[in-house]
Length: 183
Image (cartoon, rainbow, N blue to C red):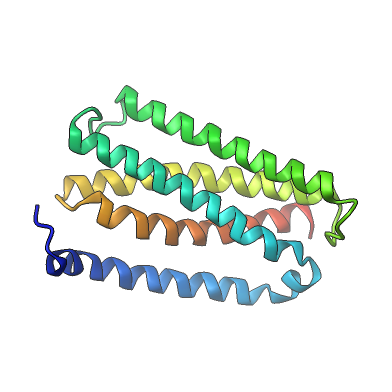
C-alpha cells in the first residue's frame, strides 16, 4: 500500500464526492421538515448530539476493526470473536449514551420548555439512538470489510463514509421517531 498524498487523494476523491451528495440529500431532508423544527426547537439541539454520538461510535468501531484486520488479531469474518465483542461493546455504549441523554432531557424538562412532553422527547431520543447505533455498527463493519477486501485502506474509506451516511441515517431516524411518537 502506498501512502503518498497523490495516491490517497486519488482513492479518496470518489468517496468525498459521494459524501458531498449524501450531505446535500440530508440537508434537503431537514429543509423539508422546517415547520416541525420550528414548532419543536429541541430537535435542533438533539440532531447534532444524536449524529455526533453515532459518528463517534462508527469511527471508533471502524478504527478498532481496521487495526485488528491490519495486525491480524481480527479476521474478516462475521464469526470472529474479537469482532463480535467490539460490535457488542459498541451497541452497549450507544444504548447507554442515548439513555443518558434521554434521562438528562427528562430531568431538565421542568426547567426548559421542550415544546413537547418529556416522555415524548425521551422516546424519540432512545428510538432514534437505537436505530442509528444498530445501523452504524452494521454500516461500519460492511464498509471496513469491503475496503479491506478491495485492498483499500479502511482508515481512508470508513471515516468519511460512516460519518456522512451516519448523519443521513441519524436525520432519518430522528424524523421517523418524531413522526411515530409526536406527530
